[in-house]
Image (cartoon, rainbow, N blue to C red; front, side, top):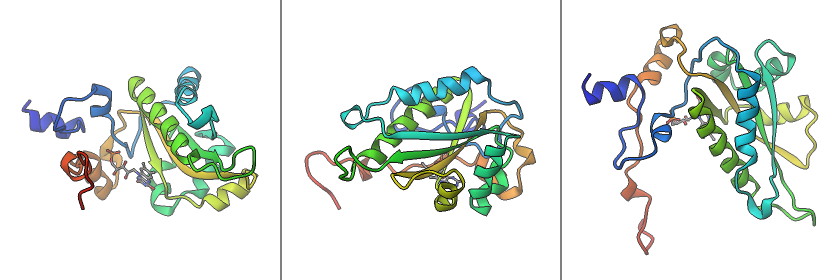
Length: 201
Ligand SMILES: Cc1cc2nc3c(=O)[nH]c(=O)nc-3n(C[C@H](O)[C@H](O)[C@H](O)COP(=O)(O)O)c2cc1C
């Protein structure tokens, strides 16, 4: 198989410089294998998130999750945007990601969202190691989710994630999603967002 074909078929990033294979192979699947995640793998995903760095080690992240077939999965699904609901409703696992907004003295924890993001980076790479794909989603009605799950105002729901083992049958996807699933993955060039010593517009 030619390199270009392999990159497209396996969704491997065509990197400018060589990087860790798990990062290169990661992508956001729109379809997963039917298999449910094993309990151990679910725990390993959260364990990876647990060991992320966080500002003052405050660990402001929280996660609400539901496995397919459960009441929680249905409730999370109900809060997704119509677009996301269409492909994510069969995901074996759905997670709502949440962060604690304030420090103990009541002031805003400006870095809480940053910390949550780091924990999700850990979870994503751990998932990749286990053959599990994570598809992060901003498209959800977070206020509805906040109400349904009785999440106190002190916390904010930041996103949802659809999770399952890689290897779903992409021929089952509607045409537009099938195209996206197999399209070459694109990124801005390094030179457009890294500045050596001086801001460049
Ligand atoms: C915070 C965040 C929100 C996202 N929201 C959605 C979403 O609502 N629906 C969706 O289909 N993809 C969503 N994505 C996935 C991105 O579109 C995807 O990561 C991006 O196109 C790059 O593709 P890749 O992850 O396959 O490399 C989101 C990703 C992130 C990090």
